View 1 (cartoon, rainbow, N blue to C red):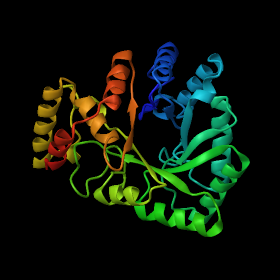
View 2 (cartoon, rainbow, N blue to C red; view 1 turned 120 degrees about the vertical axis):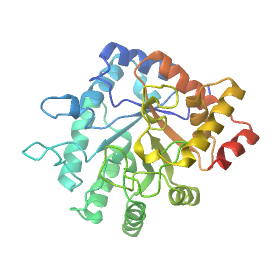
View 3 (cartoon, rainbow, N blue to C red; view 1 turned 30 degrees about the vertical axis):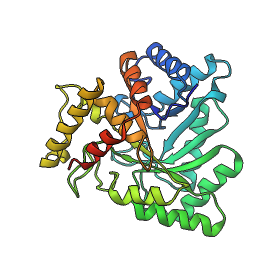
Length: 314
């Protein structure tokens, strides 16, 4: 069975998506050869009156407990650093101190019902804590066997590089993956990431060059399908994409999808997974049809001339 270069996004699992549907989707994904399951300790705190996360990790853990041998067939990816910690300030998060990281991982392992996660991400920056403190805490997790690999999500590229150099200088395991927002459409330079306060959550040409050069570094992309915009008229396009280049790229994307007899979503996924550097898209689904479309897109190989047309549109 061919490996599926697609991560199943589970942000809404256990909250907006009910348990039975979650189990069915996880079963179908695994049976189709999918191995990468992406979650976070804070999913989905915004659906809970108490602001508590953990819903997604719990339902994945329950699924694993009911699927004999299932843990050996999947790669679990989870994150910490963005879970609200209560109090009067709703924007106050757990952060990336050594104690916060240790506590978050212990809680995630308990909810996921496993003794290790395959890829652990620092979910967002915490500039109140030194990179040395965070790096050492992450290294201890790897040394203990609780974590296999480390990734940085929504971090400025210069801080990822600095953290990697600190880790190398100290003989610690460093980040080997970055996770940012990326799709076929390109935002305006300097535009803020939708629903976030920072401007460095995008994949840029600099990021692509960095990942292509640092061959030990993988690139994961969240929101690759722009929350359904490519295939649903009722989904608005974020304001960051409101510029002439979007019109030109959408026209070419529509042409290519028509020539191949597939959806625009599937072309976008094929474009991401088959590029250089290859990108692992994280696709959130809530029903079987969405999952089947995503799996077909990840398996689609774009002819060279069609990829060139897509790349040339600007």
